[in-house]
Image (tube, rainbow, N blue to C red; front, side, top):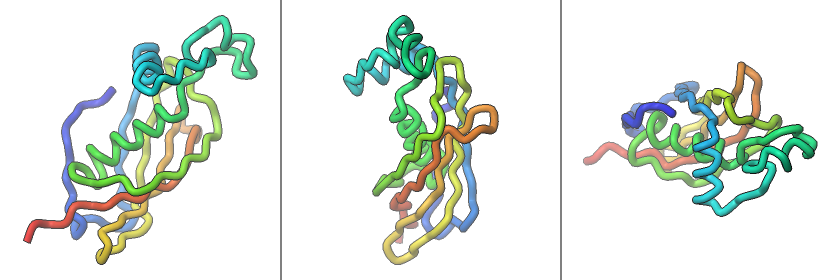
Length: 145
């Protein structure tokens, strides 16, 4: 995991193509904790013997665990503290496995100053291969008057 320090950008401080990234290590503890909190105990995630017989030939992380890491990066880095998730699309391209180091990359693509909505591209990469891509929309905090 990464540090839990927060950035905080106000809406007027954001710019198109601004980026942020965070690195997360997918380990057994993270997979099991996510299974417990989500109640998704699909054996392809938590049972090596079962998963070895699956098309993946071994355990894989929950796709939504990557979604949670995107959420964490939005909340801690860009726009940061006080941002509110509005929507997210996720296109899963490859399976992430225990032991993988996942880099979450965010890039601002659009800013609506009136609504405060910020649209960002979201990527999850392992060894520079895209595992997941999508688009997030958040409401960025406005500077206090």
